[in-house]
Each structure stands twice: as C-alpha cells, then as structure tokens.
Image (tube, rainbow, N blue to C red; front, side, top):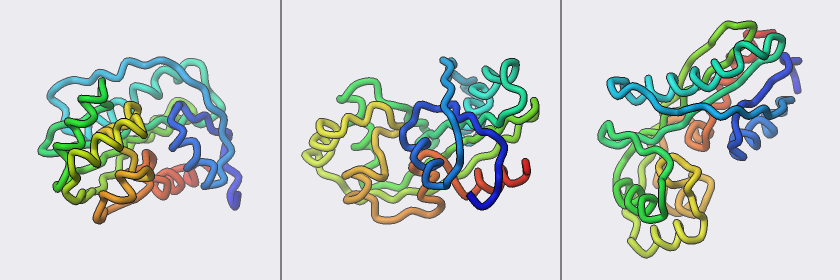
Length: 190
C-alpha cells in the first residue's frame, strides 16, 4: 500500500466488500456483530443507507478505540421503493422483474468510526437494465441464489454482466463499497 493507514476492522461478512478492500491493498481484519437493520419509515433512501451503516458502527464504539471500524450498507431503490435482500427465490424473481427494462439507484451508506468519531457519507449510482426475459431471471435466481444481495442481483454476476446496459456513477458502489470515496476518507486519518 502506498499510504500506511491505521488498522482497519471491516464489520461486514460481504465477500464483495472484503475482495474490494483486498484489491485496494488495504490491510484489514473482519469482526462481526449482529445488528438489527431496521430503520424509521420516514427516512429517504440515502438516509436509510447511512442510518444503517451508522447503526452497525455503534455496535463497536464501546469496544474498539485504536482501530478504524468500517461499516457499510447498500440498498437498491426504484420509484423510491427500497428493495432489500430477497426473502425467498420467488421474491428475488419479483424484484428482478421490477428492475427489468428500467433504471434504478444503488445507494451505499458508509461509516468510518475512529476514536469515537463517526464519518458518515454515501454514494449513489444509477443502473440501467435491459429488458430481461422471465426465463433469464428465473435461471439467474436458480443458479446464483442472490439472497444475500440487495435488489436480488450482483453486478459482477451473470445478470449484471449480460443485463446492465450502463451505469452512471461508481461501479464499486454497485458492488457494495464506493472504494474511491472510502480511500479518500481513510487518507484523512493519516
């Protein structure tokens, strides 16, 4: 790594976030805590992502003092409806049918907790899906089982590689972590 960053705890079980940090050459360890990801109904989608990221970080505030805690939450939003992680394969198919042929927003809220200071920010990317057939959607859900992904898809998987016409914004944000923004914020800690 070019810059020597403080020790980082990634508070995420997402293999995609872990891989992004590895690709950034960031030294980190994973520490997981169960956190209720509910949120108040009145929040706007951007506020929801940041609210949950901050809620995740608060679980570490009392026990971590000299390390950076990095938390994030990614949501998919279409027509101001938040599509969380699907509950069943049928729910995943329904989500992808809603996204098919339309544009939606992917919002990742990030919290960097260091020495009891919360640095909160978010990134938004617009994703344009071509019209997907019901057969393509069903085959994708059956093969890739996207139950751990907001909006029921991964941009780095088959449906993203073959179904996304274009994005406006950060690709890594759609994967689950806006790496450029995260890196710039981490540099401020040096």
